Amino acid sequence: MTGPDIRAWVELMARRLVDRPEGVSVQMVDEDDAEVAELTVAQDEMGRVIGRQGRTVQALRALLDAAGEKHGQTYELEILE
Image (cartoon, rainbow, N blue to C red):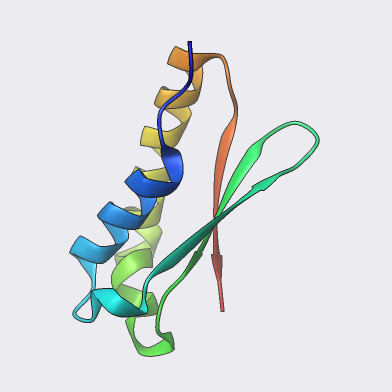
């Protein structure tokens, strides 16, 4: 069984949060103990993805944790500048 398409999910969620979805890109990187989604958005839209007091990015990470538990994998989200 293959796991979920985390790259596409992170990209979809980020595109829905920003005003200019064409500026969103996600790269998956395999690290030793996790699959890391590296999210890039326009500099002026970084706040929309992070949210007030980091709540939006915390929620995204919580959902990734839940998906990881379900599929026996560890997923992480990094927002690149």
